[in-house]
Length: 266
Image 1 (cartoon, rainbow, N blue to C red):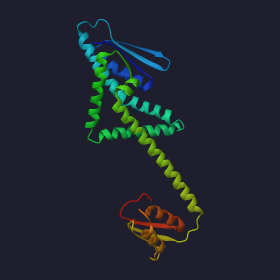
Image 2: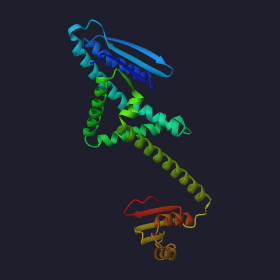
Image 3: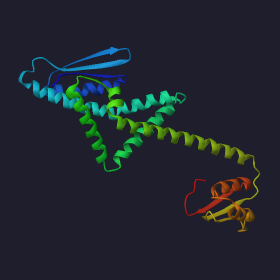
Image 4: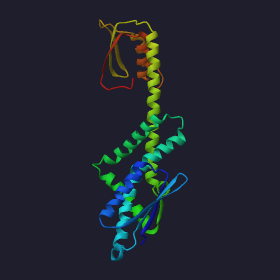
């Protein structure tokens, strides 16, 4: 058994340091005497944790307790602060042009999505994930006294690291799609402002892509021949939502009343 452990990380934020020392002080309060010290090599920080001399008969029990407790602390770090820190680092490396505020939003969204997947089954999957990683950490500490958190995350937790990467990429893609959509909407708004309104009100009824009714304020059909032509003459699948958007922009009504069985993207 090993009674001396060294935990290293690039992510030595005040919150992580304080959390680690608070957790380890719990062992001290439980009567397990510890020697704690810190080292720094460049940007890398090391926490040295060892059973104090003079433990006597309690030493074997203390070594087991220390390893198990450290494994639990490290598991929590890996699943929380380290996950967010690595997401931030991956964003900086791959999307360096993102504003820090945007990166923070994307990280929070990705982290929330990742945890939402595990909490979907009443927390059972989340507990299983913690237990699985805990066992890997505990087994590692049984044979090794030195643990590099970032390296351990990337190379010992490959499955979880892959999930983190996928969640981050999905959050980035969702952000970019939303940004593109908002730019498109702003372009449409600008275009519509330049248009002269050709009709006061439009009642739009969509029962299906092949059954569309566009009526003016007194119930007369609007552009029926164009709708019939597109519905019958188009090759392949008819993108009626694109047509609707184009038609509405063309006539630029002051008010639009939508009657649809399903909510379309348009």
